[in-house]
Image (cartoon, rainbow, N blue to C red; front, top):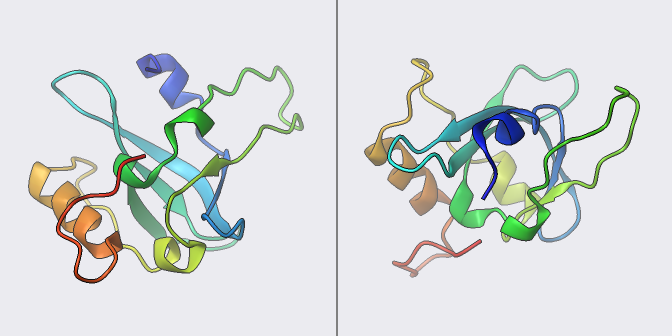
Length: 124
């Protein structure tokens, strides 16, 4: 599990779908109040886009969550990978304007990314 400081270092890291296509870059990291785990990522869909989508941690492949430790802004870091197609992630829910993510907001975001007919949230 990443610490809060390590989670904050994910800002700007590329995010790709299960198909390897780009989703965008991490803009915000939402932590669970209860245990400090990552609950979701706010991902800006493109370099010039102002649209941010909410990507629940349940679709993030946890092994790809590594803190950005580069001292230089230009240093490449491996992308964060998702268990859903980039197309689906780019069409995901937008995060709440308040910056606070409620359990209901998170559940809606998870359900929006589930395969049709599935009732369980995917595991990352």
